[in-house]
Structures are given as C-alpha cells and as structure tokens.
Length: 330
Image 1 (cartoon, helix red, strand yellow):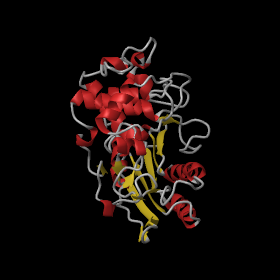
Image 2 (cartoon, one colour; image 1 turned 90 degrees about the vertical axis):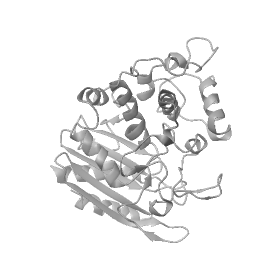
Image 3 (cartoon, helix red, strand yellow; image 1 turned 135 degrees about the vertical axis):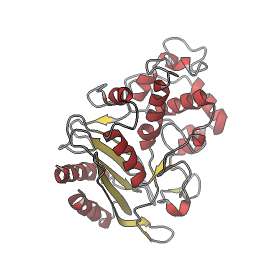
Image 4 (cartoon, one colour; image 1 turned 120 degrees about the vertical axis):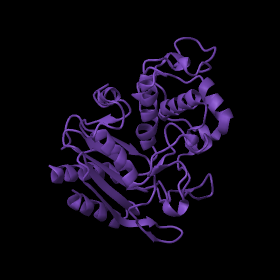
C-alpha cells in the first residue's frame, strides 16, 4: 500500500521540507504497513526516524480525542449535540447582550459554524484556571463561520466540567499520550517564548498555557496509535453505530462533525470517495480514512522542527500521498 507514497515522502524529506516522517496505512480487514523515512531530529544532534516515535498531533486532538469524548458523553445520555453551550458552562458570556456565545450549540462548535474567531493569543493573557475563566467570559465577536481553535477549546472545557477533571487525566488508548517520553518523541520548534527546543511538550502555545492538554491540541501519538483509531472507525467499533453515523453525516459541503469531508482541493487527494474524511495538524500531521475503499492512512512529520518559518510543502504532498495509497489499495 505504501510503495509509491513512501517514495514521495522520501523525496520531500531529502529536499528539506521536513526532517523526516512516519507513514502508515491500514485496511478494514486489519492489514497494516508503517514505514519511517529521514530524520527524527535535526537539533541538537541528528537522529534517524523511527516508526514507533510519538509526534505532536496538534489539531488531530480535535477529532481523535475531543470529538470522540463528546460523542461518548452523548451515548451515555450526559449531553445532546444540540445543547446550547451555556447549559454546560453557565458562566459563558455572563451578562452579555443576546445573542451571544452561550446560545451557540455544541454541534456548531464541532462543525466550526459558531462564528467564533479562528484564534487568539490566549497564552499572552495568563495560564491555568484563570485563563480558562477569562476564555469563558470574554465577549467573543461572532461573525461568519471560520475554522476555529477557540470553539474546540470551549468543547474541552465542557468535557472537563462534565467529568470534573482536567483533560490531562482522561485515559488514552495505547499509542496516544498527553505527556510522552521525550526521548521517544519527535522534537518540534525552537520556541522563542519558552527558550528551548520542544520535545515531549505541546507545541501549541495556547494548549501549553491551558495546562498542556486542551480541546484543540495537546495529544501526541505514534503512527500505530493513530492507525488503531482509524481501523476502529473503519470496523465501526470506535463508537456506537448511531454515533458513528452522526459523526460521518455531512453537515456542510466541507465538514462532517469535526472531520473535513472530501471536497475540491482537500488534503486527502482527489481519488478519495465522497464519504472520505480527514484532518490535519499544524505541526505537520494528518490522518484520513475512506470507508468506501476500506482504508485509512496517516502521515506524521515534524515540519516545524526546528522552525515553523518555512514553506509548508505538505499542502501539495498530502493529496499526492493520499492518491498513491488509494491507487495501490484498490
């Protein structure tokens, strides 16, 4: 499944677009391949890539953790996706004129249709519980829908309130972690704010300020750990059939719940079927699955090592990798 795709990834690594990568694919029947190419680290000393390395999954946290936990809570009758946010976080937008963020639903946050801004430098406001309180009471402007980290940060706070514990204490399956062993983890950026190469700690500044684990970022994973999740979705064991059907249902031309749907120019390649889903992460990660073809695949890189300030070649590489895998898996 990976012969053509591996060549593409090797060429991109040799061209210096990222230090190295782990590429993997799995079928609904359980056939699996994982390969590592290039380097795990460039600084302070070069290290070869390893197939069992943990990568900072960045926004894959949204679909592999936050979405799943919210759907599990719905399965248990603890919430409904159409609940307004203020039902679970009653202090949100407190004493602000209507309409405000409190009337937006969990579904709108999951589909990035609440109208929240894409991002804000929360890490410059403070940290910990004080920062969470400000996020809830900030008079966020609501306008046209955009992909929003802020929406998933709020969904993470819903989960913390629902279970009365921080996200960092939520159990994770093998191959996923909030705090992996640094020696087994691909480093990310030489962070000017923290003054060091980040290794085994979250790259996203806002997630760091929120405690290291947040609804939008903070999860680390190995290729096998992510493939386990994709295989479970393909086998329809990841959640109940009802929850999986709602997750995959089209909510807009480009989005299901959390996941991106196949659409012109999407990251998973033009050979994907109409039911294909995927998501990417800022650090250089991505995961995709095509239920019609019965295949899922993952591409993990640390393209931000040692700096994010480079051309993002993954924008053109990812769809080519997806096309190559789908062609071989046919």
